[in-house]
Amino acid sequence: MLDSPYDMKALTTVVIAKTLFDMGTPVYDAVTYRLYEKYHCYIPDCFENPEYLREALKELYGTSHKVIIYSIEQKLKEFTLDKKTESFLQIIVK
Image (cartoon, rainbow, N blue to C red; front, side, top):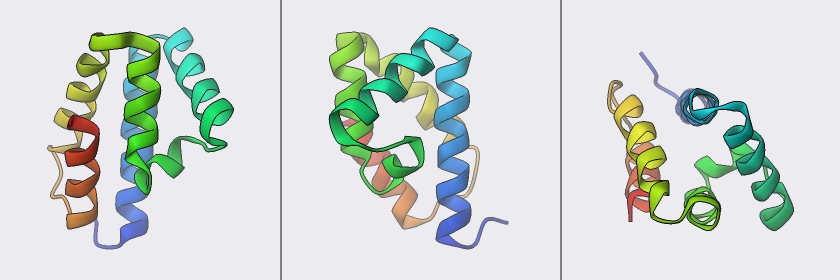
């Protein structure tokens, strides 16, 4: 069971990274580059700042960003989520 906020942050980080890698290495590279270039952050930082991920995906992929967000959302919903992770999902799904 994932009890601590650190567990949920780690799970969310892995899900985001795996989703991006599943879309292709160029997608992962583009998103991580944009996150660092614009926000000076990395994928684990998106747990506390989900709007960074949402905006980076929107800028890079336009309305197609919804496909990536949907995939992240579905993978995370396989687990029992805490309030912080549910809040993360609400923000990126906007």
